Structures are given as C-alpha cells and as structure tokens.
Image (cartoon, rainbow, N blue to C red; front, side):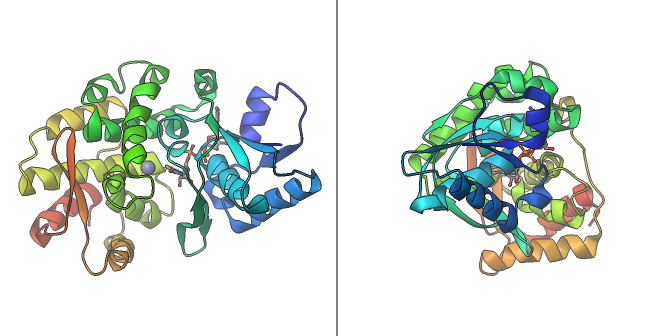
Length: 301
Ligand SMILES: NC(=O)c1ccc[n+]([C@@H]2O[C@H](COP(=O)([O-])OP(=O)(O)OC[C@H]3O[C@@H](n4cnc5c(N)ncnc54)[C@H](O)[C@@H]3O)[C@@H](O)[C@H]2O)c1
Ligand SMILES: [Zn+2]
C-alpha cells in the first residue's frame, strides 16, 4: 500500500498501480483524523503482517504514515520515500512518527523506524523556492552541529548534492541516542525559539524560516554566553540561502509560546547553543539579559 502526498502524486505520478491513499497536503491535516482514515484504508485493503506501507511525500506524509505503520496490527514495516529537501535531510531519519493535537505539534506518536529509506533527488526538482530555502535551514543546522563544510556549501551548491552529508549528521546522532535520552536533543538547535515563532506567527512563517531565525538567536546568545566565534559564518550561510533575518512576532504571544516550552522543561528555558561549530551543548543558565536581548533583536519581542 502506498500513502502519497496528493501534490506529489499530481506532479510525479505513480510507477505502478497499488492500493493508494492520498494524503491531503499541509500541516493542518497531520491529525488523528487523517491517521484514522489511513488506518481505515489499510483495513479496507486487507493488509497483513507481511504487508509494507510505502510513504511518499514530505515530513507530514512520513510522520503520518509511519505512525499508521506503527499502530496497524501493532506494527508493520514501512518504507520512507522523502520528497522534500527538509524530509530528505531531516524528517525521514530517526524513527520519530506521529500527528499533531489541537494543543500542540507532534503530541501523539511513536518511535517506529522505516525498514528502508529511498532518497531520490529527482523529487527536489518540483519544489518551490520557499520549500528549498526551508530545507536549507536544517542543512545549516546540521552544519553547525556536526559538519562545518555544509555551512559553506548551503545556498551555493545544488541542494541535492548536500543531502547525503546533511543527513549523515543526524544519522550519526540518532544511531547513538535513538530515543532522545541525551545527545539527540542537540538536533533541536534553533527550535526552541523556532517553534515559538511558528506558533506566534500563526504559521505565516514556515518551519524552516522560523528555525533560521531561531538559529540566529542561538548564535547571538552563544556569542555572549559561551564564546561562540562563528556567528558571522552562520549568518552568511543563512543569508545566502535566502532565509529571513528576523520576524517581528507579537511579544505577548511569543512569550506565551516560549513559556509553553519552559513548562515542559520544568521551569527554565533550556537553550541549545553552539560553543563552536561541531560542539553544541544544552544550557539552562542563560542570563535573562542575554536571551531577552537576542529575542528583541531577532523577534521584536
Ligand atoms: N519525524 C521527524 O523526526 C521530523 C523531523 C523534522 C520535521 N518533521 C515534520 O515534518 C513536517 C514538515 O515537513 P515538510 O517540510 O517536508 O512539509 P510537508 O510534508 O508539508 O511538505 C511541504 C509541501 O511540499 C509539497 N511537496 C512535497 N514534496 C514535493 C515535491 N517533490 N514537489 C513539490 N511539492 C512537494 C507538499 O504537498 C506540501 O505542500 C512537519 O510536520 C514536521 O513536524 C518531522
Ligand atoms: Zn526542524
């Protein structure tokens, strides 16, 4: 059975006729309802324990279909075919699957790694420029975390040529810490503020754009807090990728959104900061003066 993003089906077609579930595009449909409809389709098609669910699409489709595969008959195999840059370098790897809840993103889900991943650069040809830019934000993130060369190549080399190296940074980390007991939290670099901005902008900012602003803030804080020296190099990479410098969020909404994260981390905002390119750590002792200044500078708060 194939679960495929409706836009990808229209643009790229399907090589063979299979049982097909068209995933309605967009984050707004990454819900329990769509997941349930996909499970209905699995039941309808009579999938058994030996069946394989193939997911073709961006992060939304893979998260949704992976989670259906995790639940159907208590778990069947699935294959991920990521079709966006973001999914090829990030979302497809690491076995996290799930759907959103009205109260928050990715609140419901399971760890269920695909049996195989097929990364075909041909899919990238039909992405909008904005989608490519969004994916490049995660490439820059992986550059800061573990592969400095990506900082110089992002926005310069063809996106397809960055996929293997950018994905390798995440693959190495999740191989050591598959269930996010420690090191894997590094991959959330730029995402504390990024998620808050996404929410405070009512998703006017794409995920990648919000992460880019979050990366700029993290580098700024890191410069003051732990002697990070490569802020200019990161900024240059983000500029080259056409990613925004700042986003003026409504300060009250931004603080609310950040507080939600804070509650989860038992009282403090924990910042993931680069000490150097290739050395990213978790800090819970960032002085409010530094983080407030970074928020004012990048998010108008
Ligand atoms: N599981 C994880 O570890 C993980 C990690 C990062 C992000 N994510 C999730 O991934 C999602 C974001 O992924 P995304 O950016 O791929 O979004 P997406 O799946 O919504 O795809 C973005 C848009 O691109 C379209 N599209 C997909 N492939 C295309 C192609 N080849 N050509 C033209 N259009 C195409 C889609 O129809 C959609 O409109 C979020 O829900 C996020 O939570 C998950
Ligand atoms: Zn991300």
